[in-house]
Length: 230
Ligand code: DC
Image (cartoon, rainbow, N blue to C red):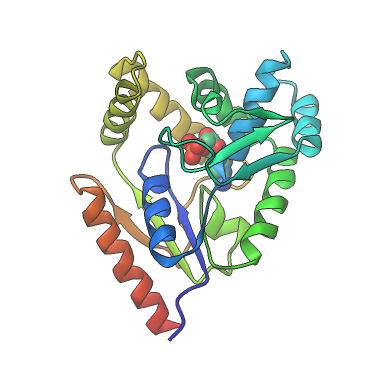
């Protein structure tokens, strides 16, 4: 029985989607593609160019014109891939707090979503891919053979982000991170276009109190189930 060729993993910010997707893709020999990177890259470049984030027309035209290149990792500094824009390696810049603070409004613009979703769909349709985002199973690749909705409480997700930043030697304030996670949840799930929502045929996985090894084990079972059903 064939394994599902397209695996969509959606869920709120910092629920562990990227880690799960990366490990699952490695195991299956699939491409791992984190679509949040594209929204982050547009946001970083917009900030670099001093564009006003509220200027929907300017941000949309940036998203339509800027080639975002996601490549295999060129350095062993914890990165899963390189992100290049206009000859610049922006892999870590897109993780900065100012990007976290501005990426939700950017990703709420219909034109931005149209431009980036079209690119994501083209990559996904080649198959053998684990694609991560908010709307992969609902909008970008509704034909995915397996859809996992990875959830976790806001407190747990803020704790993970906090540890991640401290681990990288950066400054972090838990309460501030928690407020940011809640703010992004609110914007991501109430925006008009492709809000974060659970696809009808998604399998829900709650990662509160689970280690990554346990989450991966449950995801493996879902892959097997989907392969039997397919
Ligand atoms: O997963 P992340 O935190 O890197 O995502 C960054 C932002 O991009 C987040 O606010 C939600 C948005 N996003 C989206 O709207 N749709 C996607 N497919 C991926 C990310």
